[in-house]
Length: 314
Ligand code: ING
Image (cartoon, protein in one colour):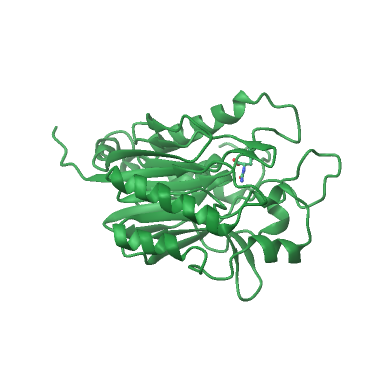
């Protein structure tokens, strides 16, 4: 059957390392350059990484005051990121950007925004699944202190109308939890975008390094397919002051196939012409939620946080 096509130029701007010594201005300059390259390839929308403006600071122990002073944004946009908003407006390109948010009342979030082609902030998301720990692990090679520096997101996973597209977003560890994707596909998301910073080394056990990329890719491929969405994921990667993070930025079609993948661990733009209509056949036949899902049998997903006893059966 012929599908009417709804093509969107979708790009991911992967970032190489941002080191402690790198200023926000130097980072924003790199983001602007990649936005220009994406636009040159016909992109309507560009995905930047999680915490894109600074090094992945949750790997370091410091006082909350120092973290707030060095790594959090107290307004968005602000003078440092304004060149990115100005470029977006002049080129007519929307974007997703991850950053650390300090609210006026002192709350701290690992946040991301959706910005439309007029450079207006259409949506904001605050990371719900915070990995890592909040204690100082003195014998660890590095820390993962998202549970220390960030509050749990206070808004639901959302979907926004952005330049005619129904777009959802999340952040990094969120992608590993199926509930993240389902809550957004139940809001009719067509594209789900996210940024990530994924250390290649596990501080808890000697996990083989290849598993980091394997889990990253199967998560995105399965989630895109099971939720009939395009998925676009932007890494910040490479060696940040000697601490390695995986690359593997990808764009995944609703078929579950990887249609574009970064091949470096540096600043790299990948892009596709994403046909949103491609998802329709899967929504009509395989994953027609309204026709096939049986929420009355899924109750444990919401009622239980951790695993418990088997259910009593009739
Ligand atoms: N980083 C990692 C991620 O979820 C992690 C943390 C890695 C958790 C591997 C579990 C396994 O990709 C962030 N920032 O969430």
